[in-house]
Amino acid sequence: MQPDYIFETSWEVCNRVGGIYTVLSTRAASMQQYFPEHVVFFGPDLGAQSDKYFMEDASALPAWRKVLSKHPLSCPVRIGHWQVPGNPIAVLVDYRPLMERKNDIYCWAWERFGVRSHAAYGDYDDSSMFGYAVGLTIESLYQALPAIHRRRPTCVAHANEWQTAFTLFYIADRCPQIATLFTTHATSIGRSIAGNGKPLYDYFEGYHGSQMAEELNMVSKHSAERQAAHVADCFTTVSDITARECKQLLDRPVDIVTPNGFEPNFVPAGRDFTARRKQARQLLLQAASRVLQEDIEQDAFLIGTAGRLEWKNKGIDVFIDSVRNMADRNKTNRHIIAFVMVPYLDQSFIRIGRTSIIFVPYYLDGHAEVKPTLSSLSESTYYDLLIGLDLTIFPSYYEPWGYTPLESIAFHVPTITTSLSGFGAWASLEQPARKTAMPVTVIQRTDSNYVEVVHRVADTIEQHFRLTATQTTAVRRAAASLAEKAKWAHFFEAYLKAYTIALTRLENRIKKHE
Image (cartoon, rainbow, N blue to C red; front, side):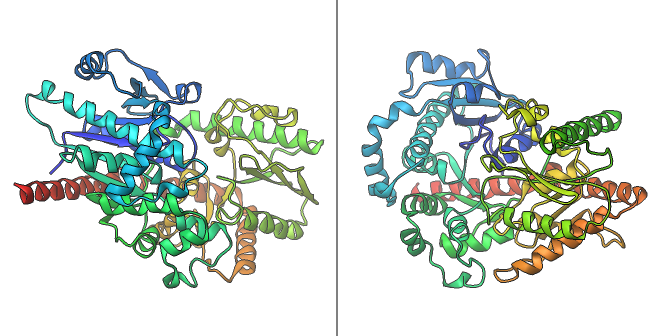
């Protein structure tokens, strides 16, 4: 049982913020193969910020355009294509006109679904009004489809993260003929518990989501996320680690785990790969030379980490302490240059002997306005630079999946992650044992073994640092081979099962009310 149309929404459609952008933008090509031109993504219209990834198309969804010309929406929309592989249809929604109605909408959400919006602050208003606007936009498009098919097609609306919870609420209340899916990529309260320095894992069974939301001032976000999980026809998450978290903190077990894949068309091949790697190394070495004000040899060992500025959750603290530990061991004349590519984490570099830590505090999207010493990186994206590294390190404490280590091996770069990441757990099962360095080293991490983790990460850095050229080539090939197992072609089947679950529950719901 599969849908005729899939309507999927996220705050990160045509809006590159974090890992969810990567999830959706890389999955789009597989979705187009299964449902050609019947996949429609909905994202926020953020003007120039969205236009980097969006192209308007006056020929897209013509039947709906006719409807809109006669019955315009209260929230203006732009229709076009998302400029990613697969080039799916995308609709950008301007949710701002709803702001003057937000109190009425919050009252409706409380009375209909018990969502506690009264404690809202920060980005809650924008996210909720965006979600609601997407809901009414999907309803309008759905009403136009019979003119195309001469029947009422089966449709699925898929909302990602708490930011789009109001999309599900709207559809459940106003357009219940559409089956719904809700995916949490990380529970808001779980991330908050971890980010506030509380031991998430040692006392896991003792945490109650709503109680912790009160303590951590997360009432509105948690309430919206929890209720969306309960309202959805099918509830999914990205790993077994987060599935356990959903059951404990959101009070609903997931229906199916939908792990995150990657598409090989983001990775150059053959001679182009070799040329791009050489170019990336030159850019990184040039930046290091300018920051450190000295020449850096061509065979310098380049390592890096990247992600959101979450000091503990993303393991930035472990990364820096591990590099310091490795610096004390480096008795050679070969430089070790560690790049911390984390937006807003701006320091003067750190130097210990022949080892240096260089901070790149920008969102690397090819348009970053960087300081003069890092000018060689100004027109580079993260992928442009990732390909030039020798090793990446993501020793996360809280990581429901972990796209960054997966991206690394896709670009043939060996990586270090932890047992607390969904990807780390997957890699532990999928990669064969090796006598030398592993393409993915998975460090066992708990609430109480920080020092041990630092030493084990440093040990692994040293192991890769001392590999011969032949061994380095072998481990890079092993990394690429493992990445092949994580392609969307292998993982998209889980989504097909999720659609079936949602449509089956919709069918049962309709029969029950007949």
